[in-house]
Length: 237
Ligand SMILES: [Zn+2]
Image (cartoon, rainbow, N blue to C red; front, side, top):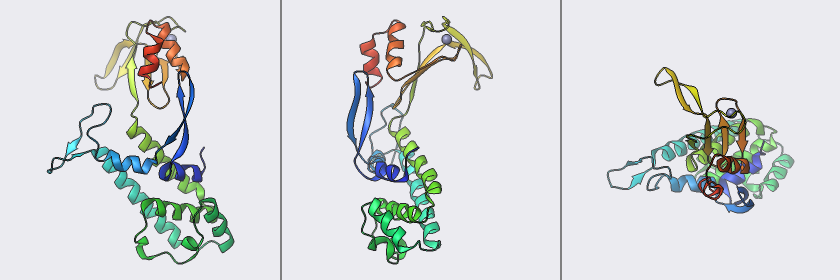
């Protein structure tokens, strides 16, 4: 599990991230997720081609991104309220927590400004993280903030599932298997192998339960008659 500091950094600053590429791991500087969420609200459609709503002025609006941003703002307001209402942690603990986040301790030791006016969302989040750390109450904040990181990452890189038609599972040799379809209220005969693309590509056989992850997915696509180069490209490297 990631620490609160790692989660807050992922949301608010540029952070080094490892991308698992077919040719090996790649180190990149990832943009802050809260900035990306802000930009996504005005994106011209999402990468998987889902339609987006549009406002009267004709500016495209990503409603999913807007909803998520509103939820995060609400949850952050609630967290700030909880920590403002709690007893102020001792000054040495606040000092240590402020040092961890690289924020001058005066920002958290002094009385909070009314309504936190003028603070950016990143500054408000740090204020909550420092108070929670100083009070030894990180767990509840980690739970909320982990949800934000996961939901923003999912919004930016929605997993796409592909069924491998006509491909035999290398583990059990089965090509097709019946899968329950809730919409049709019946079992439907479908290809056994599926590949889920996204940040962490993985594949699964619905017949025998065998799974493949990371570079194994590219090998699997090759064994099933596909081009490994094309698979590596399709999987985003
Ligand atoms: Zn199988």
